[in-house]
Length: 93
Image 1: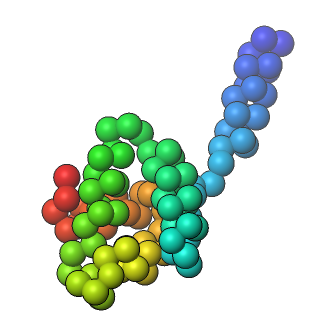
Image 2: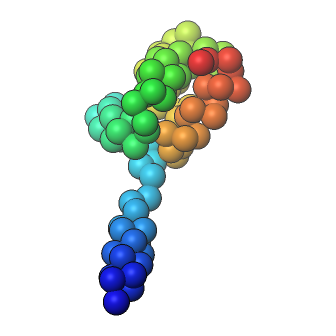
């Protein structure tokens, strides 16, 4: 009986796993809110890479004219894991 209770509790916890936050680049306010929320989805050791990626959109379209708009366009629709993968592909560690 005790094993069944543990199994049910484990299944209930697994069902409560929240989906990752998707970054919304539609406005500066939405971008700030969703990037902060996405950042909290990551383990602490990966947050510095995430922060560096968000700040360095280098080589992206319009980056010279408006880096904030370039970041919103580049990361719109991504999750924190996507941002990390992109950062690592660009050599940010």
